[in-house]
Image (cartoon, rainbow, N blue to C red; front, top):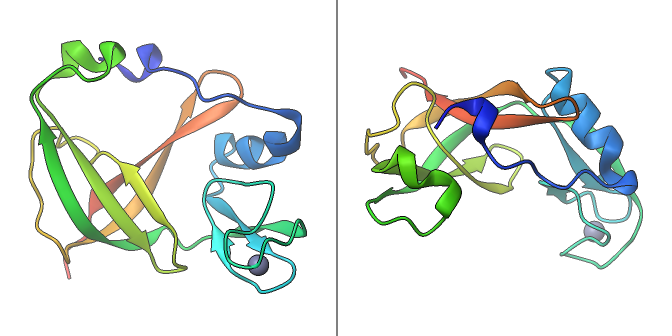
Amino acid sequence: MTIETRPMPPVRERDARFWQALRAGEFVGEACGQCGAVRYPTALRCPTCRSAQAELRALSGRGEIVSACRFHRPYFAEFADALPYTVIVVRLEEGPLLYANLVDEPHALPAPGERVRAVLDPLGEHAALVRFERVNA
Ligand SMILES: [Zn+2]
């Protein structure tokens, strides 16, 4: 699977600015205007305090691998030709958890605790794909 054939995320009016920022290479999340909790991706309400107030906030892109799993079965038809591939769970320094892949290492199985940094690639005209690369400590 190439990046051009990946499924596109839904880009809605309420999160168009979020996707535009990512598409422009700015790694952003949403910060709650009430309690300050940072989330990724955007949401209508804060999962911590339920406030609807939020603003985009630049994220460091730095994080740590929490878990990794290699997929051998085609649970998603769009990814069948990429098997086997690894899905990682990354905890960003700002708090949110992301499911993603490693850039250039689709079959690697990294250990929990490894440091990573985000890499953004344009995905179509209105979105971006966030993946991670390992960082040597
Ligand atoms: Zn909140």
